Amino acid sequence: MKSAMGGPDYIVDIAGVRARSPGETDPPASLQGRPWIAVEWACCGVYGRVYRNRSGDAYEARCPKCQRPVRVRIGPGGTDHRFFRAE
Image 1 (tube, rainbow, N blue to C red):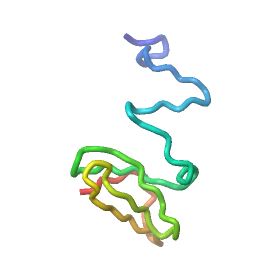
Image 2 (image 1 turned 135 degrees about the vertical axis):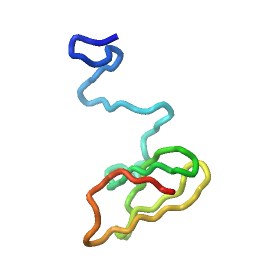
Image 3 (image 1 turned 30 degrees about the horizontal axis):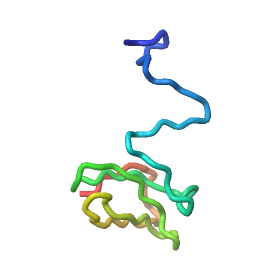
Image 4 (image 1 turned 60 degrees about the horizontal axis):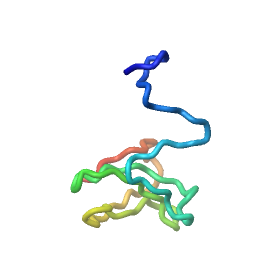
């Protein structure tokens, strides 16, 4: 069903409340506020956040299912994209 605004009527926008995906949890306090990029892990078909490392020279993480590592370097001449696919 569509609302009067044209969108689905089951989506509610409440100021100060962010929508979550099923099963999504808050990041640990040590990561809150740290820069991140979004990665689709092609190996397992899942998405996740990859946070900047402590030295600030790369974004590093492991696939949440199979633990395959990924490292995205930060440097001059890079990109301003925020979404990536790890093959």
